[in-house]
Image 1: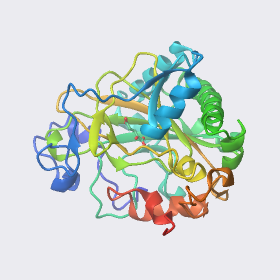
Image 2: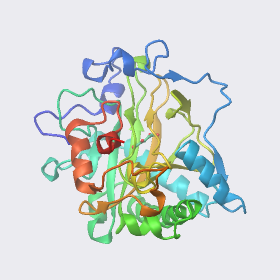
Image 3: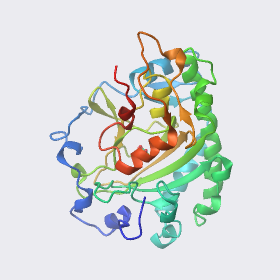
Length: 352
Ligand SMILES: O=C(O)CCC(=O)C(=O)O
């Protein structure tokens, strides 16, 4: 949440001004830096054999591939997903056109501080506490579903076709997320609609993130390490690179796949599946030369929804791992303290 008194400068404005030293608020503590010599988790060598799986949803083996990818990674690319490639490019293009527009235009759509945490609009800081290290990132967050939250007049009016593109993209990502949740449910022998029903009415946000070139990229993070709070996230990015997923203690770079969409399982899916499927911890690193853009679409429960583990997945061998939780309480705890490099979900662990 941004507050008027403490609103940080837009990262893009700092980068455009040509700062040569990273301002102190953006300097990560040594153990969280991407620098391989200081970081707690090592980064995989560039030519690592480990890479995020790719699942062709149009192939007959898709269910098995999804099962493996969810159990081993919590993140995977999908191709053969049925979303028109032109729509992915249009969404990336709309986001880029926004961030390349003059600052005074962008500021007309700045986050409204009075609306509290995760306010819709153009922002640069997610957390309320002033002492947290800032991400080297600006973003535009759209509230897109349910329809009652969707107000395109809050989205940029100066990029031709922007609002129409976001609406089409939102609808298309909702369909894909539901298709994926059905496959994920079935892969655990649950009824196909199980996870969708456990999540209830979908609250969808679309966040376009823009990472400007950074003067000292080894000291900063574009987006600190975290897992997503909701049920499932669908992410597209450009060809610059910077997204990393944590796998067995190694940060694995996630390249962009032409026409591919990255699926990231989020915390509520881990709770519902009793930890059989993990939410994926990920972060974004930055570089000195090229700006990077990503578009994340979050599929979340409503704040009042109680999320419970599927009883079919609890047994003597698999005792219930997490306490039931009201989603709004889960979210509030994140916004008051931030991920601090830890998983929010660990606070719900039941002692065995
Ligand atoms: O920019 C990226 O690749 C990551 C974005 C992300 O993790 C988020 O918006 O939560």
